Image (cartoon, rainbow, N blue to C red; front, side, top):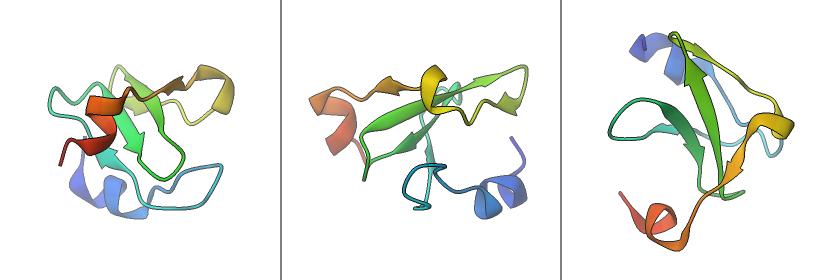
Amino acid sequence: MDPKLLDILACPICKGPLAQNSDKTELWCRADGLAFPVRDGIPVMLESEARPLDADEKLDR
């Protein structure tokens, strides 16, 4: 994913920053504890498509 796009994207729930996970398949909002999928390079920013982060993922830096 283009780093410039990641800079302007925000969590659709809290409007906070997002971080890309290590394998670049999800965008994580640690504030809400949600992971939004990235499919074919396109982030799916729908709350209904997000999954909850587990405890280890919330602490992953």
